[in-house]
Image (cartoon, rainbow, N blue to C red; front, side, top):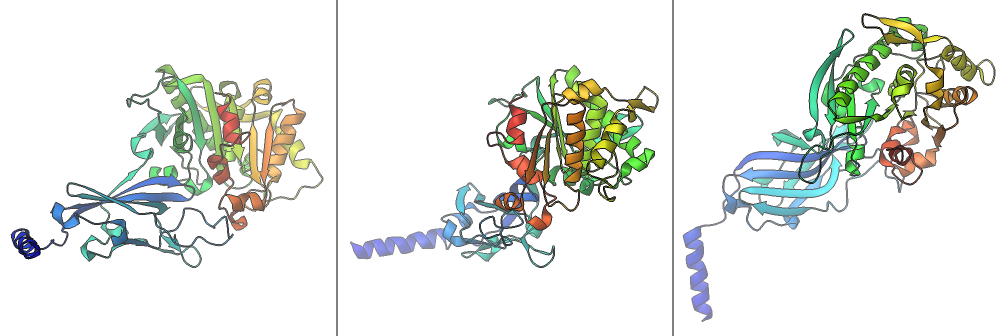
Length: 424
């Protein structure tokens, strides 16, 4: 009986032949936006012959230079090292092999000062299934792939935008939802739309939590926005013109019932934190709440000048706010105008900053919040992250400016994002 089984197995091998090497036809990656760029979740390899991938398991694969999306390991406080356990799961359907893994940085492992070593997927059973970033033909980025990408023109400007609209279980767009419009930082100015959309989690943060809220971001070109921009009328006029364009686009979303005009929210970080302040100076009566994060100083100089006496910055801000301080579109031009102080101070703001931020000093947050309090604001909140707070979110104190990371990741009770959602 045993001899017959051996002979039968030999005949089967002779009939079917040895397992062929894989002939790869296409490699695709599936990814998500992380705190500092894109994270790869899965790799799909399409082969010519389904037999070539039959029987492969997780033990046949190894990922190298696959690190987390954080700058540092929260547990050690040191730069992230490649995962000890890649958490690989392998499945095959027809001629498509799917390798899922613990999300890893698409840019690879950090080595030296801002140098990256690319990730690689090794197949121990068949080297023809090895994958490097150079082999990847297509990328599918969660949420972003489903966003609307277009252009909009207003007030003499044309800007690109990306818009996420939540959908129900059947894939239908949910109408009349809240909207969060995100103001980009200076590092994303004059960049392509995908660079803007993947710089941080502004478009995907709410969606990843399953919160039915639209999210909007524009790619802006403000090469002249710098510290103390308030000293240069042409610089703040361009900031305000960009904001006027964004508001005009939001009005189209309200008009067609896409978003609810009574539930508009604004947030932004760094230069975008400063733009958030100016946006609210223009349109305070249109928004329900705002979150300025590590804000720049397009209202009065803060970051490159010394305070002559305690409270000078906030008094300077208050003085500006009580005069003609904001440009508004009158149908033909941007005109310097006073702001609606009553609406501005009634609009609740949640200020976010890191105590040791050396790019945009925390002094700007203290100045803005103190000036608003003196002018009558009663609902504002302020959150200042310590170095220990930053480390717990994978942010090195060396990069303390990145306070938008915990802002967009933290949905715990009382957090800024939780505070905003509670106003929906």
